[in-house]
Length: 299
Image (cartoon, rainbow, N blue to C red; front, side, top):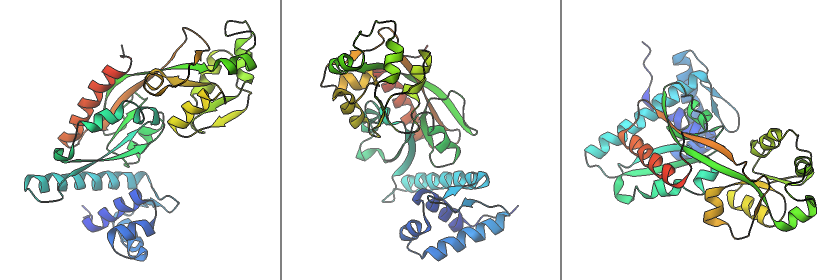
């Protein structure tokens, strides 16, 4: 069996997390050329291309296996240091969380683990339909995902559902839906009206309109931050799907539901590595408890 030099393995992990050879070099206190040479030597040792030299750097399918191995080594080392009582022995847990969860209920999860818990969080923000891709790429150890299908090497359990409602201001409705929200042509009028969308990965609003039987055709306002998204809807810039938990927590303006009785439920799941530190499982337990209390229950 081919031995994997541990310093080279760690270098690959740092390069993937940092995104560039230059950033990895600063972290490792070596030159970018040294980073590149270590990774090239690791590729020669394994006989596989491990890294796509793009910006940011991306692991190949073979590289994912080595990155996952490196991350497991890192937390094993953290665990050993903690048991030995060495300073700087906090465990870093890398977790992918969708933006709406990160802005509403998930901070309560992290708040349960104070400075004395021995946990440091490395949270990655990504759409809930894409967080499992970060797991698959070995970039994170756990994720809040919309997929009930476990990523290879992971276990999955349900959390809760995030309930969204299509809403707009009364002024927006008077301008763009003059016949009201109960009119027969409401769906067509809504499709032609300005809509607020989180980013180009966000399909929630388009999927909602497809469910009404009409494609979106109106102006699109991209607001890639949860607070900016809500503010845009409250300002009358467009209509959008707002989660109930966010409207209750941060809403400042009265918003009218455009399709009463037709909420959009997005189920959320916790995915994590099968081989994971006990502390990560504990975080998952807390996430399940908080989500069940703050969101709509699955089932």
